[in-house]
Image (cartoon, rainbow, N blue to C red; front, side, top):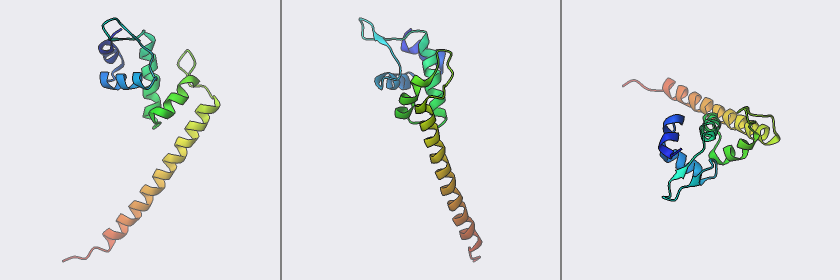
Length: 116
């Protein structure tokens, strides 16, 4: 299938699909006219990529975790997936702590506002 059909079937922009393809996250072949040709499996590949991006992984991290999916589309407990997901949890925890500190600063600043 051509990129526009994959875009329509996956709900992901053609631009993003080209980017995934350039990074090697999607597999395609080039037709004689230079167009990318994707197999029907590409829809599932895009779903997996989007799942990993939605949980906050970078494209580079997603590339490392993609081999951990089964043919049925389930993420397995392979060491790479475990390591990357644990790392993502640590990053989320760090962001939460930073936001809590910022909230405390804002609350303190608001409490110290002087009426004019």
